[in-house]
Image (cartoon, rainbow over all chains, first blue to last red):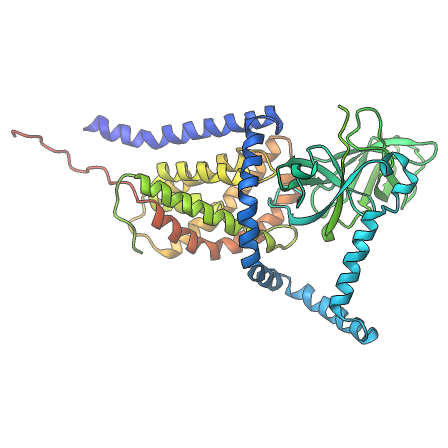
Amino acid sequence: MARTRRSRRRRPRLTIGLLVLASITVITLDFRGSGHGAIGWAKRAAHDAFTPVQDAVDAVVHPIGSFLAGAVHAGSLEQQNAKLRAELNRLQHQSLTDKNAAQTLHALQALEDLPWASAVPQVAAIPKVAAEVVALNPSDFAATIQLNVGRDRGVDVGMPVVGGAGLVGQVVDAWSTGCTVRLITDARSSVGIRFGSPPGYALLQGSGVGRALTVQYVQPETPMRKGEVLVTSGLQGALFPPGIPVATVRTYASSPSSTQETVTAAPVVDLGALQYVDVLQWEPSA
Amino acid sequence: MKTRPPGPVTFPDVVRFSVVLAVSLTAQHALLDSVRASGAHPEAMLLLPAAAGYVAGPERGAVAGFFTGLVADLLLPTTFGLTALVGCLIGFVVGVATSGLVRTSWSIAVLSGTAATVIGLCAYAILGAVLGQPSMLTSDLAPALVVATPSAVVLAVPALALVRWAIPPPAPAASVPSAGPGW
């Protein structure tokens, strides 16, 4: 009987030990597979199965979500409301609905004819898929968005995503009807960039949601100015085609003893207000 | 606070917990993900393991937490298995911490759920940093805690009710040794 009681006490410890081991095994498999193995397949299948359910439930509960979101952002909503009232006074002939429709049209037109793409023939020639942002980052620990286009429309992992003003991020997961895009502000995002003339090359690193991007490997005494546009380098093996605007220099500091300049940058696209984007059907060569 | 009678986990219990998982996952992604402040949103999926540990003890709490985390990981862009690891630890720790309670109450359950959410998010960020994403600890954790902690107070009650419906507590161990037949 005493042995039975002892084994009953030990069993939870054995269980938690096995579960921790199983978790570590799964984490290791995920790292080794990098989304291409069984785990990647399971995630895609889960997204395929869950997306219709989420869409259906979302249609029903969206007003509740909006109400809760409104309660959280009551302060900023009041400010916005005041702004809108002032605007309404100035533009009485234009209803809010018309304005919203015009903004949407403007955003779509900007995507249809990317303003910066005409100067970059390599990008202008790449076929693109227009997409709507259907969800913001589902995790508090990653800067990602979800789009309503997936493998059915030719979207695949690794493809760049651009907005009207420039680079938004890269597709990191794709299933039949949607995909997940890692934004350039995510801490795991690195973009090879080019700037200035003669061109300098550096690496743009994300630092998390709402934080400035950091520009790494800028050699001391490199000529650089605030507001300078940083574009994708497109060097051999690069993750993005060349010439896409990514960010503008925000701060630039130099210290005599450091081996590189301290440079921060801000994305050219307003990543907090994304509605429509384009997925470029271009895959990294490596 | 009423609980189900103790007993083994049966197939209907597994089905019930699967339903609870599906409902929680849908609520998380269709409703709670849109409630944002400073880029963070309420976190319901960490409350289920805590509630399971509170209701059904460390062993069942750990198992429930592991599977809750695995399912949550399927739809998250972060490392697969991270939520499963945090979930089984939460279920186990809450189960161990509350198994010695003489009596249970809603306030203790809510407190356990809230504390577990805070500890779970910290563990998640620390493990993420160990796995090569230091920003999870340095920049993402603070807003996540600010939003998830007060929301856990509210969400702990429905999470507990759902888990109590799904999982029975384990049968208590016999405290008096039997003399055996023929004595």
